[in-house]
Every structure is written in structure tokens, then in C-alpha cells.
Length: 267
Image (tube, rainbow, N blue to C red; front, side, top):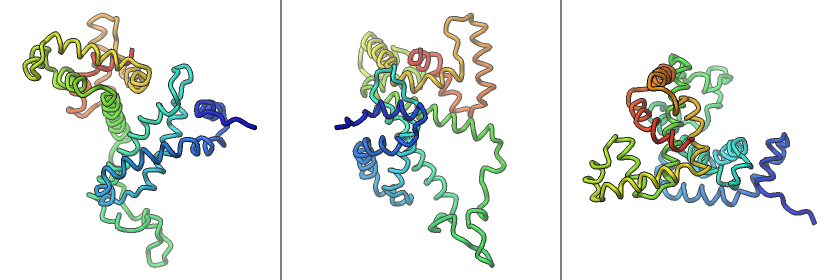
């Protein structure tokens, strides 16, 4: 009797080049995928219906999330393969909802069944070719940076979701709103020492393998100096700002969290 290979063994085999095992891996995690999709879909069914997103769309996105999880899987982390699914699934299901929302608001041609439908006098011109590309005049670097900004925010939110409600509250007030321990203490009714403890517990929780893996690519990208001089720190910070060319609001948010939140979590 041939024993079934684990998800982790399949992911490693795929990483080694045996892409035919994607189907096998999918079948093994399919029940988990449907559980996640069903929960996601039933929670916002009316909204998805309004956006033209059906259940099969969610399942399809989860297949691509599985591919991303395989690429990210690291056997040395001692985490189960399914732990790597959470972030790409959340990212893709959020994206399909946001993309449909944006397109529905701005593009009336979405009432058509398919953009591949043939139109024109001769019936030989795909409808998709007649729809103007709204990003055509936007430099590629800007589009790429917008995607990076969005991915960063989703990564931070995913990591914060692993914390308790009290921990999330303290982290958001401390790093997003840049409030002092005394200010948070006064706002929440907890002692300053208790707020300090919650902050410490939160940052410790964010140093666990999966949160660190989620945030580390952004840490590497902006190259935050940790044990360097103040001048080098300011120079690196300015280079990061110039490189990213962020929108003001997103840059402000990043500046509030990067030296503390991302550094503590990614190191």
C-alpha cells in the first residue's frame, strides 16, 4: 500500500521541478480551500453578488494562492504548508473584490458576459481590444509602486490579525497614530506599565516565524539600518523615500511603523 505524501513533501517536490504534483496537492487541500471560501463568501454574499464575483471565482483565486504558498514554503521554518496559505489567500480574495469594485464603478462594459466576445462589423474584433486601458498613461514605476504599497499594507494587516484585540489596539495607537505610552494609557484606561507590557508581548508575537516571513521582504526592500550611525540612518531613510516615491499618506504610515514595527518583527 502506497502511503499518501504530506503537503510539505509535495510542496518540496514541486519546488524541485515536479509541477505535475500541483493537482495532487490541490486535491489534498481542497476541503480546506472550500471551507475558507465558503466562510468568506457567505459572510459577504450580497456584496460579492453585486460585484459579479461568484463562488468559483474565489476557488480559482485560491488555486493561485496555493502556487504562491508553494513558492514561499520553507521546510526549515517547521511550519505546516497550510500556514503558508493564509496570507496569499487573504491577499487574493481581497484583490478580486477590490478589482471588481474599481472596474464596476468605472467600466460599464462589465455588463457583458465576456471581454472575449466578438464585436464589430465583421464580428471579428474582441470586445476587450476596444476597451481603453485606464493605466496606459501611468508610468510603470508608479503602478509597480502602488502594488508594492498595497502589498505592504496587506502584509501588515495580516500580521496584526494574528494578535489579540488588545494587542492590535496598542500597536495601532503606538505606531500608526504615533501616540506615547501615557497617551494610550489615558485613552484606554490602562496603566502605562500595562500598555508597555502589551506592546512588548505584541512585538514578541510578531517575531514568530510566519509573521517574520511575511514582513521580511519589505524590510529587505527598504533596507532599514539597525546598528548604524544616525547620519547613515537618515541617508538610508531618504534613499528609501526617493526609491519608493510613495503617496503622502502611505509614506507617513510606513515612516511610523518601519523603524519600530517592521524592524522588530523582521529581525
